[in-house]
Length: 455
Ligand code: MN
Ligand code: MN
Image 1: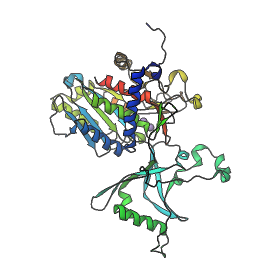
Image 2: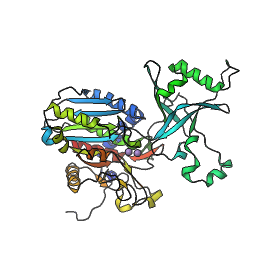
Image 3: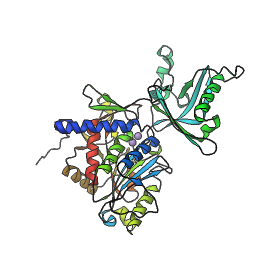
Image 4: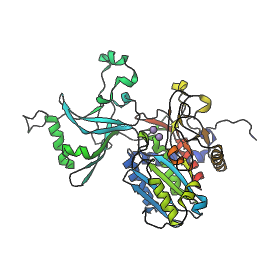
């Protein structure tokens, strides 16, 4: 019997075969990430993969039976994957896993377009917690939808293909940045200067026109998408970092990409639902709006998850209250991995380390554990037994040192429904930066954790 606890490194524990599996899993994850720059992209890709895996569209009116596989796409931005098991759903509850698929980015303002000094710009309004200075001088892609008058929807994706142009927010040259350099990081670039260059070619037809670059860009947009300027008021467009997920390091042990938070948890959760053949009823959720508080029709504070649970319960004439109280949940979200470059922000004995496996956070919150789900000792014990019985390498930690800051996840919204919940995720370095860093070992460990939880 081991008396002392020591954290394990997944790579150190892995034999050649396991290492192969870790690297192979990462390939699938990177391919998913590249199609999942926004919650719409991730939900659409999840739908496609669900259908490939035999899942059929869900209806609130249907009577589900054991063995059914369903997906429910909520308004294109939030998806529920349901796998009905053979156990009595009233007594056994539902095994629920929730990750979010929205990530920090720059949304367009309702009136985004203007011209100044020979350049045309889109004005942005940042979404989620960003360090604004990180979003300048960086290739950006534009993603989203525009509604034309009469209900036609145009999907836009520019900047991801190698032949596409990208978009660009300028920064001040160091030669003239003496004053800017004296400012704090938070003030060096302000929100109203996050305007992206979208054109520079004046229209030749309208020599009289004052804003001739803007006029020319509008002509291009109208030709390609049928858009007029007022249509931006009925759109959801955003800038995200352009480019693909890439291996990091000579050994390729790590992955750098936009939006690991929280697709690095959504992907293993989804794969676990596809791969498991379990007697339990399993529900996997890709949530939207986590980065801005989980409100609205597609966020986890919405009643939609209860409606899905009630529909499952009704199928078996089970009491939905009993189903909820017997359900269990993993809130799959990232946490801050220990970064030796910024060691003082962490408390080394109680933080998660890169490549040391699935990261379990009993609680999140800020300061005195403010605003958090705090998983019970009993539920932590249940999770530990499941992981250890199934060879899952896991670790536990807090998000940074006490008094330094804090954060939250959707865990509290699920546990507020009376469902035992704990945060299990992946440690991330440079979280919320345009390109974040994770370890292939950790995303694979989370996959094994999700499979163990479902089975
Ligand atoms: Mn997150
Ligand atoms: Mn986040």
